Image (tube, rainbow over all chains, first blue to last red; front, side, top):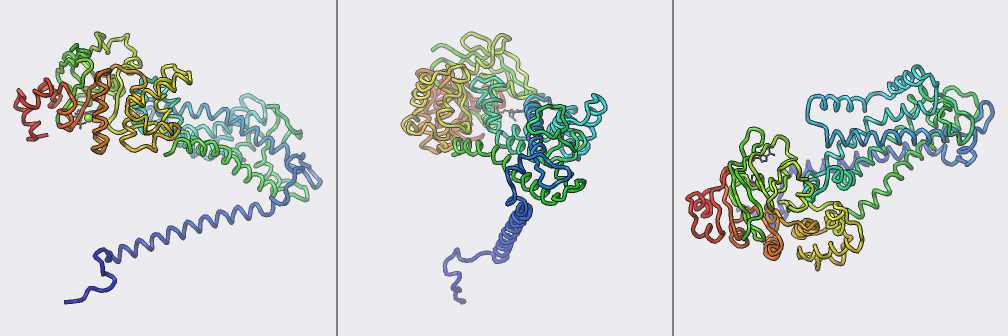
Length: 299
Length: 251
Ligand SMILES: Nc1ncnc2c1ncn2[C@@H]1O[C@H](COP(=O)(O)OP(=O)(O)OP(=O)(O)O)[C@@H](O)[C@H]1O
Ligand SMILES: [Mg+2]
């Protein structure tokens, strides 16, 4: 009779060696890769920010760009970035959400709607330059208004629209049907259920979508170059919708490739850090109310 | 006892599937009526016709008549929202909204236009008391409803249904996801509520039907096999199939 070995002194001490080893290897692998990716992202952020961020001054953020001399700022371009983003979101959020809610809640289940869904899906992954070309066709050729903030903002809105529609539809669809039933069983109308249950529960998903689109729109260049141009009106706080509307991202590209100012390199570095900083900020601004909200609703 | 709900020759089809066959029933006021029968026999379906939740299932078709308090609830001038306000429902799985306890109970009254803080406070308190939950939650009404236990959540759902002051309460296997103690609490609750409300409950638990209900309806394949006083149905069923079912020979 063999003696039980020490390791198996209690009856739960044994385990399947191969499965356990695989489990450990897998866990280690996932951890390792995760850490590596995080490290990579942090390193990338650090590289991009380290040359620009320390040199940022209010004058740079606020100042007018210069064509020939050193020390130009990015004021009008930065302003345009926010202005265009704002207008495009004002247009695309209500439309995108409405379309998404329609598709999730009202659209009949037929071939036509299926086709529309495929189109929306396709459009949300079409290269942005296509939307730029569409913007040219619409604003420059058809309406003949040239390269303007208006044209840029509307084209940006078209770019955002499919993504927002999809995100809204998917978020609304993922709300448990039990909650919908509960609301209807209390005598709510469809609108009341949408407003008081579906949208609040789906909000976190929708906001994530808005963040992604806002970030993408803020950094978008192809559409803007084609529809809003590569110049600004050269003034600060120019709300005129028909002014040319170069944004920060476009300015960055312009400075890097075309500009003749001696400090182009430095401007580019600083503009990069501003761009990244703002995109992070956008995420933060949209997220904070959600955190408060989820503290109230989660268990 | 007066009949509050009258079902006459009701037929219901899910597409081509004939789910309810010629059902005629009179459900009395201020009493508990239990629906029993094997899985898939149409208990939930019949229950959902009473507050027209079936309207939302595509492809359902209904023939026949259901009257509540003398009104044909499928006639054109009935507003389904008003009907559902009068015919509350508690589901099999507790389904509180991801909102605070208070907001869950106040949800229905707010839908129907009650805004005053004092009035809402009162409704919330009374409903939670009626659902025997007040003592457990009165100090943290602002907490999320999802932080409650399953049994508490189900009583919250009952409170939420009571808050719109229904006449009828439909309970579709409302205790099947709960432990014995929570189940008992909800059964006791039903006993108290029957003085004010007409309760129709679906249950798979024969003992529960025998314990709490006054009338019991036994269904089989979409048909009513037997409908009588609970005591009689369980002690002296008149149909062989009922006897087989309650003695556990099938289903
Ligand atoms: N939405 C639906 N579409 C098509 N058929 C359905 C639908 N809902 C229910 N049915 C069918 O109708 C019949 C009755 O279903 P119902 O849910 O009313 O049964 P039940 O008696 O409540 O069963 P259980 O005790 O399992 O809950 C079943 O055969 C079911 O397959
Ligand atoms: Mg059922």
